[in-house]
Length: 392
View 1: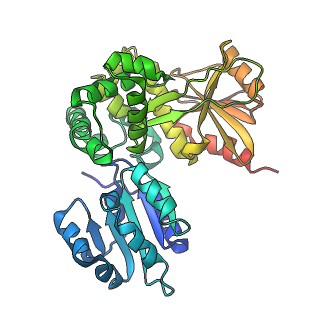
View 2: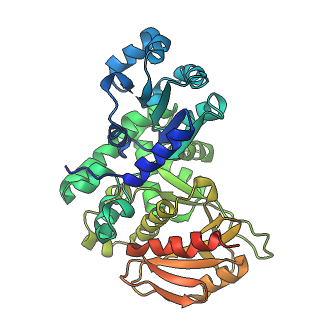
View 3: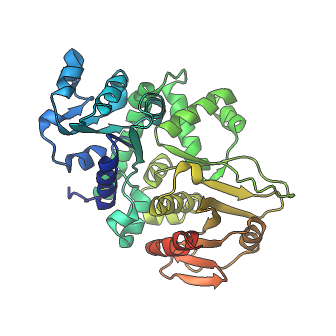
């Protein structure tokens, strides 16, 4: 399996390490955190994998002496497995001479965010990492990464083996990883049914009670498990942007399964031809394109919103950058045109600019400050949005 060098992420981590004694790289299991960390070439004595019993022992006997004896970059993988390390890392970070810096890898944002905000406040920088994206594999591979998703092993294997890997990943999440994140009273069958429900409704307005009725649990149980799934980087929730309109807003957030390959595994979609005739085609495209845009523009979770009103006007993604509001719609059409809904959303929200991201090969202007952008040309979004956002 060829290594895909993730230069932008590596540069981001290196830059952060020059300014912070601790950098936390968080993302789902198997997204490539360990592979990326190994690119820093630290000796084995400076690398601790807390999934490895031997490395656990190294830090259990006398962690302070072990870490204090090292200088340079120290990497601790799956750090959320040993929360008692965080107070010690705070002490290490506060040493006047700072002989070492720490790169911490983790796959549960609930545990990491708590420790970073409470124990390592002012000492650590948090960097999100997902699976592979189009900027890393090349825009010409958009169909392949859409079908297989961004997990490196899933993307780089042939179609049948990729599907098998994704199904195994989901099974391990249900059987092992979920219980490592939080206590759950749902059975494995109920958790899997919830995942199936999420895949079938990805990109739709979410209703806790409807999901609960489908699975046979109450809405509070659904609500709690969605928070767990978000912490495991499995789903993404977009709340509704409130622009104080006089029109009646739809209040329900939109939920997406982050990785399109996992959606297709849950829906038993094997290849692109099957996807083209599947009822979930439009929703699948929306979730896939959303994730690529978020990654390309470097948007944080706190920036992401959706917007729709009862009268029908809506836009899939709304975000604020440099004090200006932008919007993106996702259409599975090779030559999308401006719709009444898109125009109404643009005017009602007072967007600085907006785009429709589509699978066709061409990028073209729709009207003033509104563009149709090919998924293969996401650099155009940076030009349209980020450049405009920095204008005086």
